[in-house]
Image 1 (cartoon, rainbow, N blue to C red):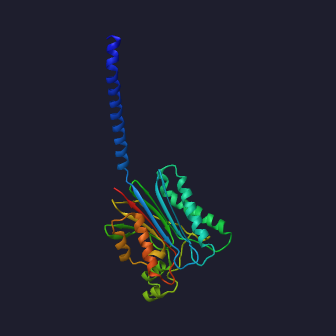
Image 2: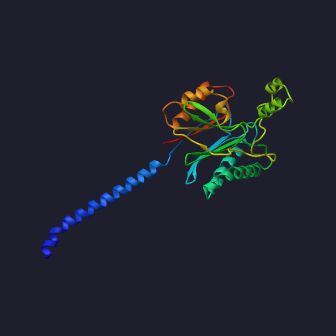
Image 3: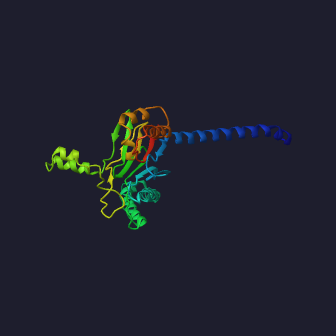
Length: 283
């Protein structure tokens, strides 16, 4: 081919190369979008009110990492000078321990280790002052819910209009119920005890026992909402009121905000701090 003929074909070659490049880039982009869409998303929402208290003793945090999404909520024991310091130290320590994970297989040991380290950190922070906190923590990875809990804050799953209880409250009422079942006390003694709502296990004291942990991860379904809340939420709103809000086709954040607004509208004289965190599993 002569030089003039080569020059005539050159523009067509350039155009063809550009078209091929665009096609390849489009296919790569489509593949990446498909991969991203195939990964279940976790939508996060939260809300909080100080209520009628002078200080906010609740503390919470959420974090997204390659090992999953973690949410931690702690309710510092009201009336103790170190309540806020205890809840802050507990949540911060849990998140730090989570960030140290190198493999997802380490999750079962994570909750136990984080609880022990948190308890020691709280006692070191308080330096002899009175304080303590409840704590609930969840990790959602690949559609599985891993969890740990100590105290009376709650983890629930809202699925198809109903609540599924995840953890138990570590309060004297549970102990009294066991004593009634074993015949040690009467039902009236169990129900009427003025101490039944007192915590029997929490973070921040030498007698800390252990953290309750799910023996197996819970497989979440599409559109499940995982709810973490302090007692200022469930002592104020009924399950029916919570169901009405969570059933709405709104974002996790808007649902959390509506829960807090419903609590504040009641204007209870002794309203406790109230905190809610919602993790909603996507497609």
